[in-house]
Amino acid sequence: MFAWAMYDWANSVFALTIRTAIFPIYYNAVTKSAAIAQGASENGPYWVHWLGMKVDNSVAYSYNTSLAFLLVSFITPILSGVADFAGKKKLMMQIFCLIGSLACMALYFFTQNTISLALWLLLIATISWNGSLVFYNAFLPEIATEDRFDKLSATGFSLGYLGSVLLLILNLVVIQFPQTFFPVAQKQLLLMQSGISEAESLKQAISYYEAMASRWAFCR
Image (cartoon, rainbow, N blue to C red):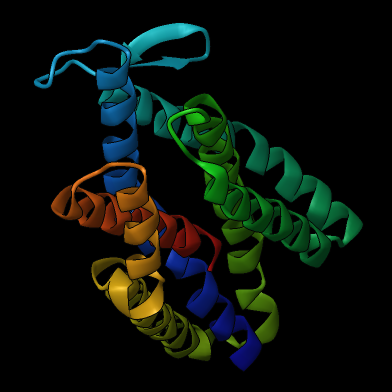
């Protein structure tokens, strides 16, 4: 039962780090910079390509999320029936978990040149995260009696909140204080050697490592 509860410790990180706190901010920053580099106004709109369509970056993000949940609503009843019939709930949960983890790790390569790929990876990760939860929740009646459902479920939620908040704090510290964790001074020196002013080179060095720290957060 403790192992079941600890799964919430891990999967809640996706909801907080990827879906809520860090990825959306990084996504907006990257898509804005990419659009401006291609001639867009500073005030927007910031166009991206999503499924062959040219749409606003915030619209693409919303469409992507909606599509993920729509696909989940179609595939999970089918997969749940198959898993119940074949007794493969654990295997199905492991498959969804693995695919989602790999998709999140691949988000490390999310830059201005890989926006479409990042949206696909986010779609896959969101589907996998929701899919794994379907089978995860299905284990509750098998590992606890009905009178312990509430206590065990509350334990899982509590560990999930605790784990996700602890990792979020760690990620935010690394992102906000890159000088403490990355060789910012060396990066600044290299930029200055290319003719960039001291102040501008420091700004660019910090920005470079803040972006790297954000991408690392997607992998944890």
